[in-house]
Image (cartoon, rainbow, N blue to C red; front, side):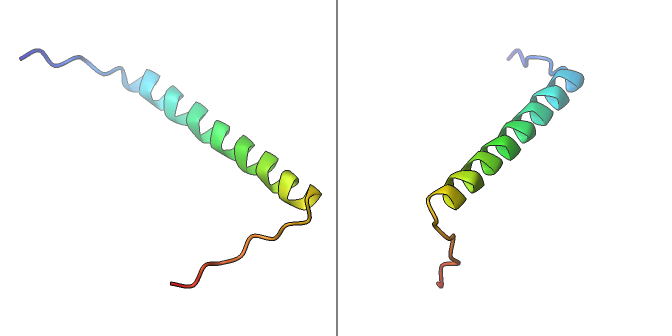
Length: 45
């Protein structure tokens, strides 16, 4: 069975970009919530 080689540097770059994309999404979402005067509430389990 052939296992593909993983380029660790490329993997780190992908993880970093993914992290930045998530932060950007959170910022945009938080602005949207403020604009629409909505509050995020903690859900009780």
